[in-house]
Image 1: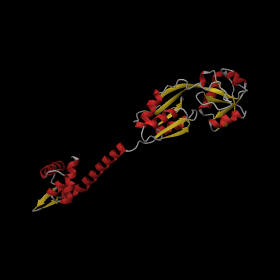
Image 2 (image 1 turned 30 degrees about the horizontal axis):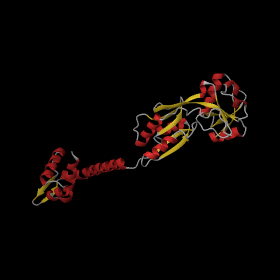
Image 3 (image 1 turned 180 degrees about the vertical axis):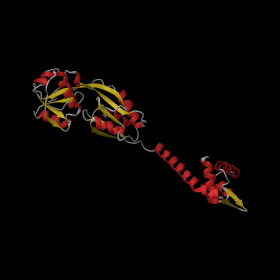
Image 4 (image 1 turned 135 degrees about the vertical axis):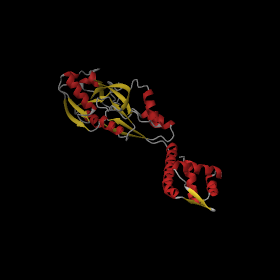
Length: 305
């Protein structure tokens, strides 16, 4: 049955008059009559009968009326919701960033989207790669910038932005500060500080470097954030790892580690097969098109004191 047939029938149930129902529906009476006849054929019996000058519902008509009214209301509600969805303001873009990465990475793209997309809004959450992956799969995040990891969910589309590596973060008077690179063997016996915990991306890098180099690393202290660990290094409590793309704090030096395990890729990710809204689509396009050359290594062996 067609929706307009149901609408004509409901108008008849209210007016019990073919002429007035046709006027209400803005159609001719013959057109309304033909539509009701086709509806009756589909439902297998008469829905109305005329008794002298009055029109009455048949038993079938009375039985069908509440069902057809509910169906029509549901169709109208669905149409209204679809219209509201098409015309609503752009939903906020929900982004995540790996705690191993610097929040400054997506800022130029977000600034461009804010300048050119009317009503653009976003939120930015930090967390571990595992946590952010779960949130994307649970549809509470749209996209995330992640450090490459074997633990990323298979359902995630991922695009490499650039390759980075870890560097040793130290004070300018440390012997490492006079080197262009740090060999893993030189880290043995140093007091090392971990951002996050042993399961963090930096902690995993420490473990890989130690295992593949056959050395023992002394990771004595941890900090809950990159900023906290940087303060610990500045206070002379030890050395730490920092991704080369991170802005270098004043008074500290970053020297790259000469080991393949210190290298990793920085990815932009989103759930595969899920439709992209305008904000997410534009974000992914601009992040992938951006020239990331020079994003890593700018802080190498520089002292800002």
